[in-house]
Length: 178
Image (cartoon, rainbow, N blue to C red; front, side, top):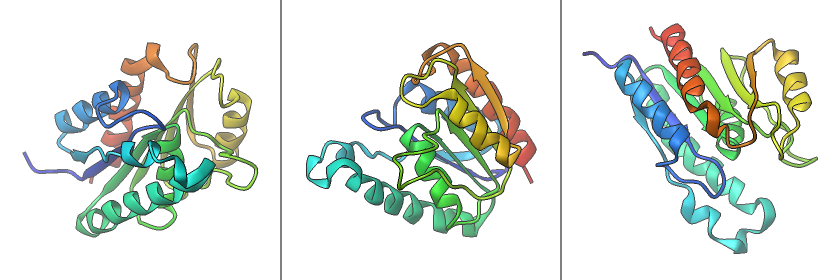
């Protein structure tokens, strides 16, 4: 099978590359003929000397360093959960991507760091009962961009909607395929 493109799947804060959601997305990518990688940011999350948001700059640099050569080789899709979604959006402004898949995106990391992303096909899944990121904030952000948004009866981890996330991601990859 010919590789259709590449996906970089970024986990959330204090999670890991083997987390349930990004592992499910990796299975979808592989099944649909996309190569994929899951960067490990756990070393950055564990380092308290970065301060409250200091590790974010390191995450951004790591993702951008991975994404730049991949984007030069062919279609690139960035996906992420929570902080992984935020950095995926930010990197999409620096590196050409075909599409974005955002799970529980923090539309305001804090007042000085709103979520920003390239105007590319974007699919979002978010929990109505997210205890960290109000659903109304995500609705407003997605609505202003006319992004595809699925709101589900779940919390921040979307643990009851791993399969729904995988199904949405499959649809995005099918639409993004060359």
